[in-house]
Amino acid sequence: MDTNAVFKALAHRERRKLLDRLFAENGQSLNKLCAGLHMTRQAVSKHLRILERANLVATLKRGRDKEHYLNPVPIHAIGERWISKYQPRHLGALHDLKNRLEGKGEKRHE
Image 1 (cartoon, rainbow, N blue to C red):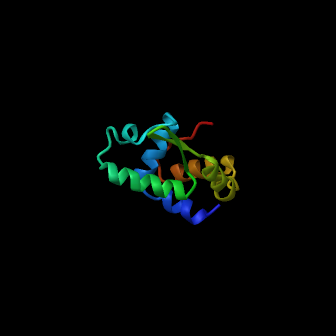
Image 2 (tube, rainbow, N blue to C red; image 1 turned 90 degrees about the vertical axis):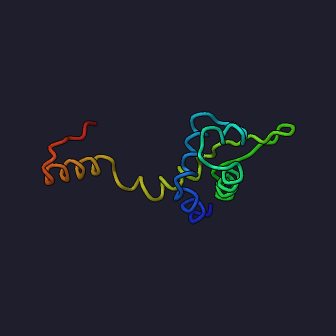
C-alpha cells in the first residue's frame, strides 16, 4: 500500500465527499456521483482517478456504465498504523482535561 498516495487522496475535501457518498451508497455511476456536486464531470473524474490510484475506489464496468465502489481497506490500514495506537480512553481523558482547563466544563460521554 502506498500510504503517501492514500494521505494525498484523503487530503482533498471533494475526494472525501466522494468517499462519503460511496460509503452511503456503494456502486454509483459517474453521473450519479456528479449529481448535486458543484463540480464538473471532468473534475469528478479526475478526483476518482486519484482515489483509484490510492486504491480507495475500485471500478466495475457493466456494459457502457462504470460503477465505483469504496475500498475501505487502505483507510483501515492507516487507522491501524497511525490512529489505533492512541487508546480511546486516553484520548477521552485528554479531551475532558482540555475542556476543564479551557473552562468549557463539557464532559465527553462514553
